[in-house]
Figure 1 (cartoon, rainbow, N blue to C red):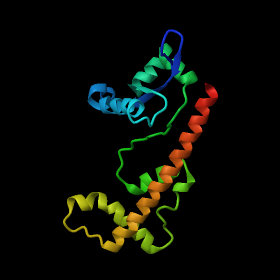
Figure 2: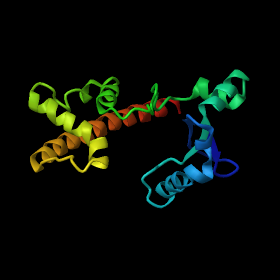
Figure 3: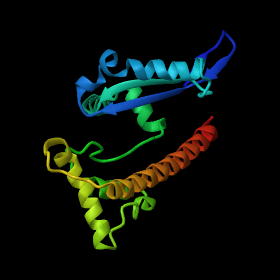
Figure 4: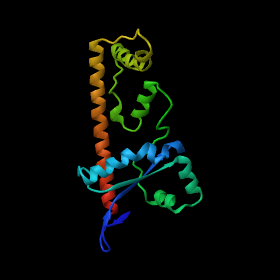
Length: 182
């Protein structure tokens, strides 16, 4: 969408539709004011954004209702929008790290192998991480050695690097797609 600079000039901007799973999470004042301030600050002050970014937040139910009733805004988004992130069950109510790891591995094979499983030691280490979610918080009996923590830390570092690489590539791809449409 073009935002007017003056009567004869237009500055392109990005409009982002954020879809949340509960209507309450669409409350801009409660949940989104800091994000909005940050986007404005990054554009106007930090200059890390070259294009203004605006966002609108709706629940999935609102989006589906809007599409079902032919609301122009939602119809235009469905027709002309670019999906930045598409996932099913993106916030599963599941704390099983094995399940979450497999979910993360599905979209990009580079995620596979970050948590190796070839040896008993590697499987035990992942189990240690899995147990940390509950046992480290609720049991005085959970123990982790410096060596174990170091190994897990290395895996987390690799995970961060791979996620950064995947996201950076996706941003480049989306930037090229956006440039091609303008």
